[in-house]
Length: 157
Image 1 (spheres, rainbow, N blue to C red):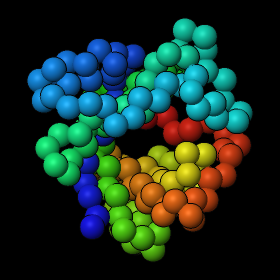
Image 2 (image 1 turned 30 degrees about the horizontal axis):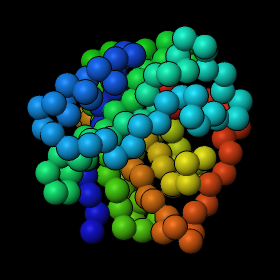
Image 3 (image 1 turned 180 degrees about the vertical axis):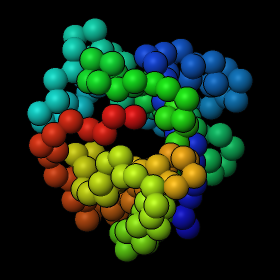
Image 4 (image 1 turned 180 degrees about the horizontal axis):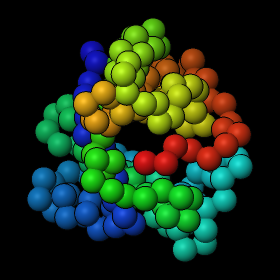
């Protein structure tokens, strides 16, 4: 079944925010990935940013996950109203990912083209024609992972 989750961006304090959310909602983090844990080819993360969050997830209820990452000014990313919240759509197939992504981008702007990513998913992000930020993330079944190294910096959220 396809899913829709909320993805938040923070100016370096996502870990603090998610400890707060965990205290409020309960539960345990499903993933905690720091920038130092997943180096991306061609991207140099500053020493001061190594421990910031590349991705963190906290289940809320039975099926929803609140997710986040830190924006890194050292990579040219700047947090501003409008890019601090994304809707993260998780389709059931690669074909559905392509259809949904194409539809969402129509009249808007692609932030990161839909492509295989180093973490193994087929992912892209865009701003729709209404200014809403979207992530489309298809997770291949374990046996079909299609990870490819990135040759350039990840999208600036």
